[in-house]
Length: 90
Image (cartoon, one colour):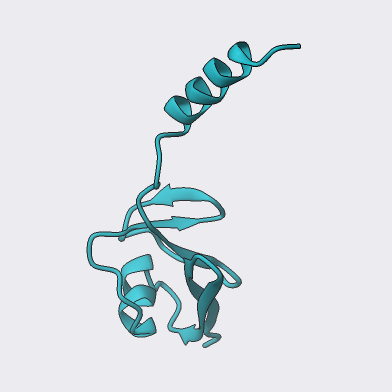
């Protein structure tokens, strides 16, 4: 029986921890995170830039991403930039 080859990635400012794994067919995101040994408590999990549940079945070649909370709300950050831009002389 063929195995699944996946990566589990935890990105920090300036560095990434990448763990390459071979898992049994039918493995889930939770299985990959557990096998990676990376700190995942309180983090969301994504595949391909989309948040998924820990029970998501993996496919060969998936990149499981451990997603940290955003440092700033993107909508509020854009509002601040827009207010600053309106105040600048042209």
